[in-house]
Image 1 (cartoon, rainbow, N blue to C red):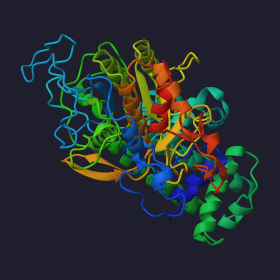
Image 2: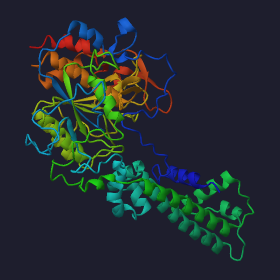
Image 3: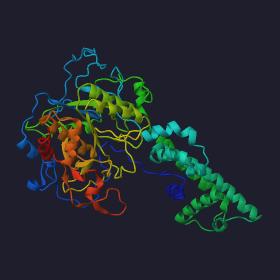
Image 4: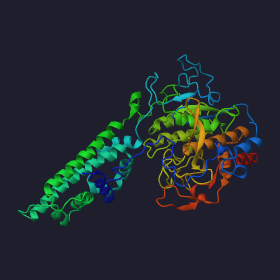
Length: 550
């Protein structure tokens, strides 16, 4: 009997289970889940993010125009852009010449020559590996699963009514809704409980009909007063109607089989989820909930699943004018590769320490094309953000690909600290399309997303000296990082606050409407309502404005 999904769907409607039988998608960071919001338009030029609406008919950032008027950097020293991501292909033909190199380290001698706490950190650092380099975390679980496992014993046996209504369980409810393991295990708990309630309900019906052989028609016509009996009966009746179970079916055997099938089906799904949800960080023999040391990991940056970080790096700074691949947005920069984002959700500890590594080793811009719905050790990340601001470092982060309003539903890391104060050195970026619409997957927020940038059909580097198109706010984010680097290299005396102000003031204002990302029904809204600036980053206008600053 195909009752499983119907049964849980009914419980979901009743308010017992939040997304208990959801088909959870675990995307690679930065890749859109729903790229088909509006009708397909002709493909944009391969380098469309560099182009301009006036000359080329697409809403790019006008970097080609910017280079014509501001062709040369005003400093010989290269600006360091840290890419905190999945890793970078350091041998890529379009990236190998623009990598940051730690000149104070002697490659391969196994010593920490510069005494910065990291041995042989030539081009960056890997916070997702053992010190000997033999074990590296490539894939891991979601933060929601980690939080569920941490909290489950406290909440799993709480009464249903208390679980549903008590505000103190709100966080756990949200964790369950996003946890692959939690939703499956909670479904098992629910069906077992309702199996018990159905058994009691049949007994109650029998007591009121002594000596009668009960059939489904007796069950269907019975009106219980107990709320749990009501839920149990409703769940069964949904399955009965869907499978067209005859009224003459014997009640007790049917209820027993129904319950057994439900428990077995959900138990199987839970066990499958349990097997697939693994916290592979245990390979490092390091406790991610104890930030007692910043000095762990190794210098291996090129591992499996580094496509995302390699693509991001190319958008910022793929070697310009070398006749291959693409031109990055910024020219006088070095890319510092910091590996801290696995396939799965990143760990707050690694992100906090990656930020500090970037700052301490000279990065002026930190690109963060990742995010997650929970941040249990947010204070560590907040402190790292503050540290970066104290040192005058700008952090550019992607808004995320959940088609949601960040003003009401957060993604982490974010610019608002636990104490309510806001980081002044963070720029949060949504994704736009060649025709100046919001990308269907992009998060937005009138107070939380600063601006938009090209984030669809973005052509860039991938491992093996190859190239391809990708999309996501993960691609929009390095577009902005590239613009920041371009402006800062032309006007090196600007402060981080001035740079942020310049970028926000110089956007291309979009006066038209766009479809609201994530709306159940197509909803046109003003583009200007979806971010602080209501516009798209513009490299040319940013440089013009920067020229007026003293």
